Amino acid sequence: MTSHQRDMARADAPLRSKKTARTARGVSTNDLIFSAHVETNDVVFADILRLYVPEGSKVADVTYGRGVFWRRVPTGAYDVYPTDLVDGVDARDLPYEDWSFDALVFDPPYMHTPGGTAHNGHQNFENYYNNNGIRHSEKKYHEAVLDLYLRAADEAWRVLRDGGIYIVKCQDEVCANRQRLTHVEIINHLVQIGFCVEDLFVVVRKNRPGVSRLLRQVHARKNHSYFLVFRRPMPRGRRLRGRTGQMALRVVEETRR
Image 1 (cartoon, rainbow, N blue to C red):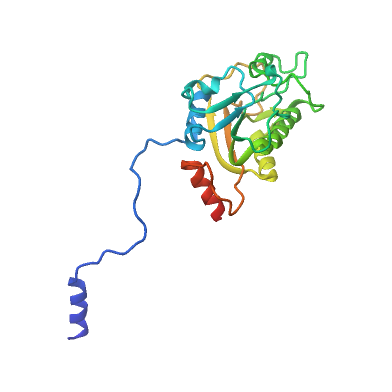
Image 2: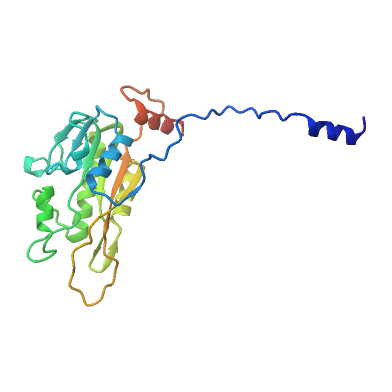
């Protein structure tokens, strides 16, 4: 058989399916949870819980206020410990034991109100979330806001179990005509103390922000905020106990890295 005949024979031979160890699993769908939303906080928060916190988990919401975040979460789905400063519980000094919670939620005021007419109009916002009345920081303005986030994060690290989820709500701001990317500052600190960044959700408000008196606009007006999702990593080689579903899968992935 000539080389030309051999080439023709190979061309006529049926193609063999390529062997692969991969198996297609799951169901094709576009019904997914996305990272950016023009929605209210309660809608996005319910999605975050669905994605990262298995039902039945023990969750501390340390800035509970009126419980707005939980409006779309089925009653009884989680073992929730709702507290804020009205209850005398400070997020920077929690009355909980070490490694005692599966998840923790933190949503403090985004702006500091030092008194007088400064930031006039935000007092009601802070009263709503009940988190600016005890242990005032010596810092002012944005540095006071950031200090609150960083101290609360250190306490969250203490009370979260290995593999626990920390959900933080924040918003960037312009302070003294300087752009402060609060979400970046928070992420940098939490990574430094040991947290893993799991996700970032952008929430765009449906209505337009209030009108401000100004001679010339210098910076874009903020009309979005963030949900940041962190995880306290599981120590390498530790066996999984009491972890099911997505949380267990993420812990396994972490131990393999």
